[in-house]
Image 1 (cartoon, each protein chain N blue to C red):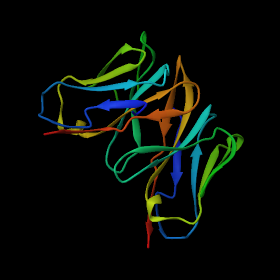
Image 2 (cartoon, rainbow over the protein chains, first blue to last red):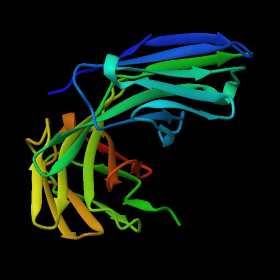
Image 3 (cartoon, rainbow over the protein chains, first blue to last red):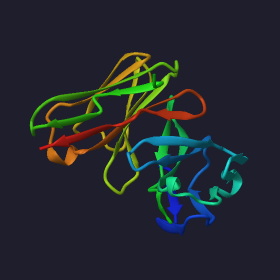
Length: 111
Length: 110
């Protein structure tokens, strides 16, 4: 099956700093999503971005499908940005598409 | 109300007991999924379903079963719970594009 790798695995930032998280995938995908898992365990949809660039406030994402990677940018980080960031890709298998998750980037933003 | 609702939110059960986790959705999506997350790890797929007549095993289906009672309902069962099934369980729905997740069920098997 498809492999999804995220880097870095852990990241510590001071409040106000910028960061870039990377997601590499091993095969062509139909879809790609970025999620934030907050400290309470909830998964929050950030971006649905199979290709191109999107921005939402301090966050933006870019997917280059032909080169099999996606980047998530966090600018002016805040302590509420702490948590784990996952990318997930969808490959078509049989009659349903499976979402495969990366192992995540754990972000800690300190004061 | 949440679009994807999981019940219960938290559960402690004993080894050997049967337990069912339920998921319902109001988004009208055809695809539904059950995932498991262990501490410090990503989500792994247990089962997925395209519609009520379509059930597929994921990468870690052993020890689990599912039932798609209706388009909006997808239940996960542990026939005989064991301690290494202690984890955070997520249900998700998807149509053609974006997937949406429930709040999660934190299951502890003692």
